[in-house]
Each structure stands twice: as structure tokens, then as C-alpha cells.
Amino acid sequence: MNLIYADMHNHTTFSDGQLSPEQVLTRLKKLGAKACAISDHDTVDALPEAVETAKALGILFVPAIEISTYASKDVHILGYGIDYRSEEFLDTLNTVKEYRKARNIRLYEKLQSMGIKIDLDPAAKGVGRVHFALAMVKAGYCQNIGEAFDRYLGTGKPAYIQATKLTPLAAVKAIVSAGGIPCLAHPKAYLTDKSAELLISGLVKYGLKALEVSYPAHNETEEKTLRALASKYRLIPTAGSDFHYESSDGYNASFVPKMEEADVLKLLHGNKTK
Image (cartoon, rainbow, N blue to C red; front, side, top):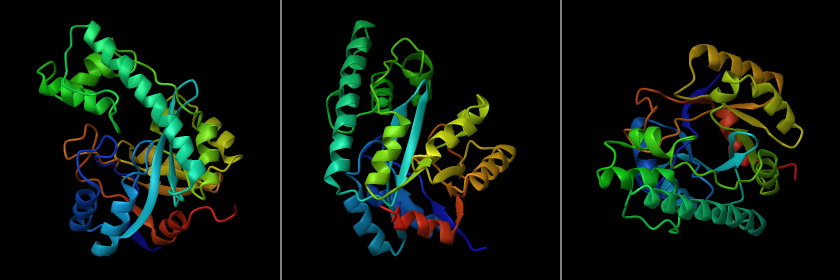
């Protein structure tokens, strides 16, 4: 076994993170990471800068994405080793971005109707719910991001607006078509509602090849269960911090994601069966 510090789940200012691609990679390099991925929500815009920064820092970099999907519940699909210049893939992402923009405009209007006035352009590129939360904190409506979600923006809360999204199956197929390896992200919720194996077994048929096993919110028992599922379905067990910013809710600063070096290389090379 050759375990290395490999963080395969990070976000930047191109989606809902607060650090630039260069800052994220520099931070990881200082922490001792040997390999990493940037997996922004529904966009690959950070990847060209990240690739160049990784070369300069001497850190192994895996181009990635996290696609938000919905099928009776929110499901996030990570994609590793993707051809992020694929026109077909970029067309799919443009559709997703239009869905997100429409949701953001409705959310902005909903907040206004509730008397909540914030300084934010809902149609701007890369805007997500975290940006709404930050704007609400800045305007004094909430003390922190967690309160904004707990009181207003979270699922089922007064200002929540469900965006139109791809299905998990459509996301898996899009990632495979872009030469990537689809991975089911932060699957703790599916263990809780006992849908994990049903979801995994259904998506494996269409190209799911990895499972996020090591994650800050997973306890030892959950990680053991997920590792067993990864083994059963021959999935690459991945590790990621889901880093957004230093004070991320649920982010454990002492968490060190580790993976087998051989598995990291599998993610880097993507799906070569196409």
C-alpha cells in the first residue's frame, strides 16, 4: 500500500469557494498534499489556471467537476480526468448553468418579497446559494452562512427554490462521454436513508466508477460501510475535504484525505474505454 495525501474535492471562486485556484493549490501544497483536484460546481472554468499552477508547484493535479443533479433528492456526481475542453461536455454545462441562473433569479425575487434586500447580481456567472448567504451576512440579516441556510436558504426553508437539474444518470453519461470517471459524492445521506446501494447499483450500469469514501462528515463506521460498497461494486474509493473556505461548516481542519497513489493515477487518466 502506498497512501498519499490526496484531496480530490475542492472548490474555488469559480463556483462557491472563497479562494482562487492558485490559492487553493498553494494552500494544499503547504499542507503537504501530493495530489489534488478542483471540482467546482457545474463549471470547469478554474481548470486551465489550476493546471498551470499545479505544474509550477509540482503537485499532481486531476481535472474535475461536481455536477448537481436531482432524482427525488439532491445527488452530486463528481467527474475526474475529464476532457474539460470537450464541446459536447461544455454544451451540457451551459444548460446546467442556465438552470442555475433561472433558480438564482427566482431566489433573489423571493428574498425581495420577504423584505430581504441584498447587494448581489443573481444572473452573474458562478453565483450559487453560498453567495446569497454571504450577501445576507454582509447586509446584516444573518450572523453567518450557517444561519442563512438554517433560517432561509436550506431545503424546505422559507426562501428555498429548487433548481431544475440534470438527473444523476445524465451526469454520469456526460462525464463518461467527456472521458472522465464518475464518482458519487459525499454519500453519507444515502446511508442514512438506506438508498446508497440502490443508487450505486443503478448508476454502475451506466459508468459510475468511484465512490467518495473518505470525507470529513463520515465517521469510522460509515467509512467502513462505504469502503465495503466500493469493493463490492469495484469502485475506486476516493478521498476529499470538500474545501470551500477555512471556516466551512462541517469542514474539519484536522481531516487529512488519503488515497492509494495507484487510485489517484486512475482518476487522472480518466475513462479510456471510450
